[in-house]
Length: 269
Image 1 (tube, rainbow, N blue to C red):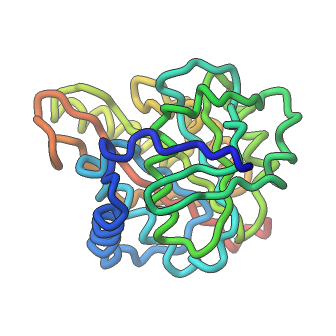
Image 2: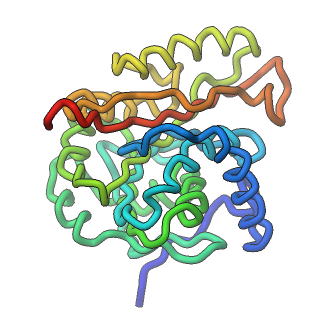
Image 3: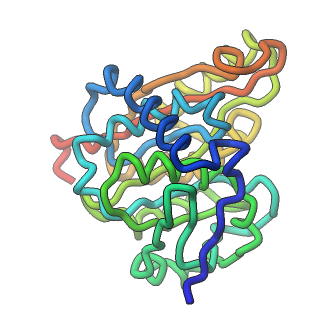
């Protein structure tokens, strides 16, 4: 019998009804697709708030995958833990993740490749209520045809520890890397814009470290930037806004940005 991790935030972060969820995700992708003329990314950074807050920003990245929807077979998904502290990078100990759109099967071959690394652990508790990974799944289920998932909830880890896991899973064009992170939290609108602008520039320069005050996913971002530099990825900012631009008040906002990272074909790696 399959061990399936049920959806934890359906009905709060995104619709629980399949038809409503399909409609929302497709509308977000349609609105984003007109602006998505960039190269196909090897990796993306996307936010993880409720869709009414950050869905437009996330969709800007997911729309860029349309040209490779049939090529991507593995998604390596990293997001920060918000509820349960863990040391290292935690696998869920599940066979699949459920959403209202169906089950997403885990990539057992990839899990076997990393499970014995000292910084990789198994924690069902870290994944049980974690939203940073789950909210990405309906987008992935919509934009990709057939893929398996490597979900890693990132706790206390060094950039090099994260980068080593990513290096082992890097693969070729069949593998997409997704890093889930929001930016600043609970600052006034214009202060957040200023703080986030610095964070965005650091990411575009592949220059860390990014603190957790700058981005809740600072740990996976920092590790990814080490690997991205090593693999000569070229960053591009796709969208930036904050909750004051979407569905929130302006006196206390959360920042959101999406990035694409392309492989530079001219560096001969």
